[in-house]
Picture 1: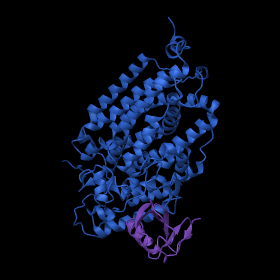
Picture 2: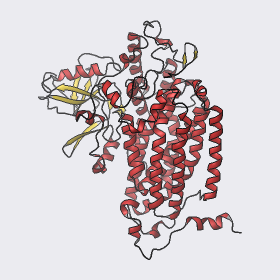
Picture 3: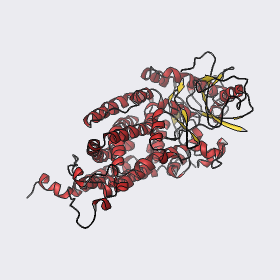
Picture 4: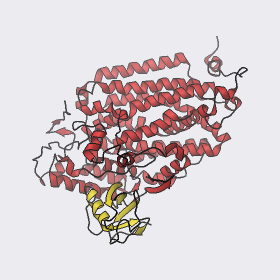
Length: 84
Length: 514
């Protein structure tokens, strides 16, 4: 099932709609968002995905991570600290 | 013979005590506004201009003559060909958003002309409605001659009738504030906050930039409009004073609500024009500096005088002066085909100026523009889509603008549930406005919800067509990526041939003719 999410790439200036399958790994969200924001933010591999301020296990599926349609997710490069 | 001040009240204070009807039937609360107070509570309502009909007609006739003279002298397309192309985009932004919003204000004033609770207020609102007719027709008249010259000017006349995302946001604001508000909310939201609080920046600040840029017609237009606004804006203060006396919490809530909504509107319309679309050599101050001088100082003084506090989100608002319009401009640039005007990449000199004017925030925007430079260098001039987004963007369920609040390092959007649905708000004030009156907003669908429900296409090109834009109308890079500081890194094979300074191949730039 397709799951549209509000995605925010750290360093970018707007929120985007990221469309993923509920069976996709969480890491796929980071890749998709990095590509979508690529004309404004230099894509960097290995970004972490956060929801409600908590880092999601990249190996979990979107459904296993508890994400449902129109949730907010943030993708933050590893060197950054969650703003709190 | 009576002196003016001796007879003026006879012409303005025309209320009488009803014998054959009930006051509540003449002024029902749902039309006249909350709180419903007996006529006596409004008896002392007054405003300083106290215009009579003959004075009004004489003054307006003189203003119309000035507008006509300027139009005849400098209103031809060739007069506009001299203007820098980014500035023409500011005209297109105003040409789209101004006329029908002003017409909506006609309706709001006419409602006050009928249902406002003091006759002097109704009289001033009736003049206000006539003012707003002028403000509808002046930009239509002045910009109509540009329609055959440039299709984007033609599109500005269709703007409000389309499903374009900016039009959705504009109608969401104008419909509520100008078409639906009762006279009390209209007076606080439009007259006190929007007109008294913000339009000085537009009319004085932007008017002076128009003069420096050489656009005397725009300058004349905003000056002419400003003198009307200064008069009918005076309705707001006395309404607010009576409202505060009887329901101070509601008075504060209306101010807080409309200050935030007005801020988002002006940040885009005026912020773009001042910090990005005015040529650097003509800028005298940044948008933030104009805001500090013309809005913050004056508005805080007005609030103090009205016995009200600053809005509860004041710190968030001050922080957004460093960010919001920069966020939206960079976002819109990379989705420029979804709007009807061209946009430019800030030059290195402009970026230096922006860094100097916004020392607390520009370091977060410089990497974004560096990345956009890099993409242009990869593609070479003329390849618009390499620096253009293809993924749908998110919109706030209250202001309907792109999710651009907060900062690049900490976007402030948040999702909340209501009535079994999820809503996203760009900021806490937008969330607060929604939650105070969810029944007013909950059923509205932003562009994303329209896509998800099948009412709008998800594919970007199809969505642009759904917005009513064709290839010769949608926004492009103002110089097609032909910037001098990018030369030497990629070929000029794709036809970009501007110099990034408002000229094409060294001569004044002809805008497209169709």
